[in-house]
Image 1 (spheres, rainbow, N blue to C red):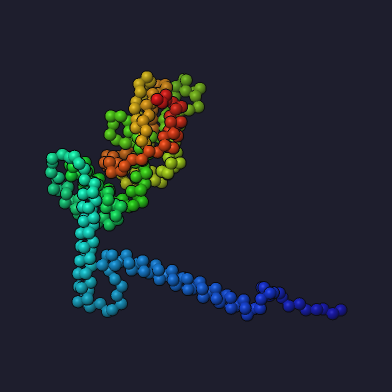
Image 2: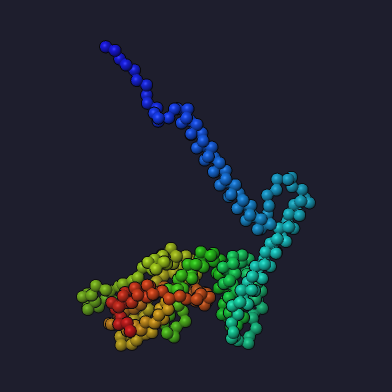
Length: 299
């Protein structure tokens, strides 16, 4: 019996082996070229940002003279950047200047503390906020504490964006200055509550773009208090007027033992709320109406 031998099939029977090796070499070279381009792009960004602080790449041997020149150049560049920051904030303050104000002078300690912090604000968006703060403080001295300035200085652009979104969801009861993030309500247990399935009901703020990690971030920054808060028991037959995300809601508790649940802004958070122009949030208010409608008559 004759046994025929069969050679193993090639990876691609339609293409010679040497052609496959060439293709692999081309792909490898292409990948290396792309990696090199990406690396060079990253290096350029690194050099750009360090140059903003007066630091440049230098492969020359370091001498005492060259080192002193570098230090001098760095100090001069940073001083120029800080001056430019203050000039930008001044321009924003003049643009936002209020028409009416108190005839009171600024506290000199407040002003020079403001300057010291403001000169290190490099982001245009944050410079606009600092310009607004100075304009408001000049018109109404005492509007912003140094503690508030210290917290504001820690805010990144992302933090400011989260805070701005939170402010858009705020509510205030008529006669109260501190803003709140209304979540829902809670009803204390009573004989009649056993026949109700709505003892507690809350909104999920993440549905409206403010997730729990965002809430935690605002807590860490000291802009809202660290836990949910319940109002005191709301009397029946008494209507409370609330301004909620640009709309007015008149709430009247259906039964005793009903409280509102919310996150409350801190004093610092309340001060910074003045800087944000609030926009209507119709979807949030619609959901809030439905939620609170289980426990309140809403007019």
